[in-house]
Image (tube, rainbow, N blue to C red):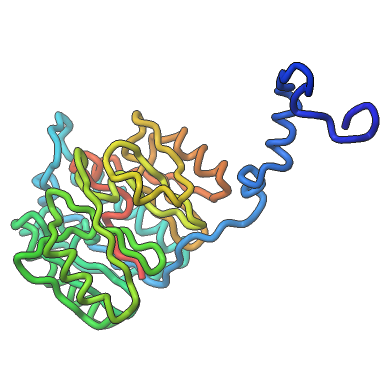
Length: 297
């Protein structure tokens, strides 16, 4: 308060000089963006999480970039088990699918199917060597959802699809093409969904650069997507040195954040979200992220 009991000015009306101490007080106590941290935030919710075990051949998984670090399959299995336990801690019932050593990437189930409302849409993964992975996933999802299928010439990885409300953003990437966008539109049109294609460049999937946390907030890595499609959201910017943390998994009140991203975690918590750190370093070596290893519905 000022000397006369009125709120103290942020700036001097004669000189225009800003009182930074007062400005900081107003920001901390009256800025609605800062007050959000006091209000419980709403994350996406789910009941089930379909997961698939890590195969013995995981060290031969497709890598989207050069890496000098060999994959430790046993460590990957330990990390995957901890990931599954974290999902159970968040109240999700696991639907487990056995690993298939013929498919080194098979634990990355997100790419094989989308669950949208009452439909499970089986994809055509962009990497031809992965297309056999969809069979077991379709069988498991068929117990819960009505099955739809994409068909060639469409190719689509689930990591390129970000559903927010009744809008599905689809990344046009090395793995996902325009025919897939058209087929998704046809499947979802009757349910009132809008399918929005967006170019992806310089990164594997749309969700390698952007994931939805809830309450109109995104974890966002600039420079890889068409920013205009995401300008209406509150974007929590991921530092370049923590780029792997753009792929977070937000469900049932908690945001899972990959290990090794303390600044990203701090920014997400500052926005009002509860977080939990998960180590998936072996999956990172082959381009995997936190959303890759489950299908939540």
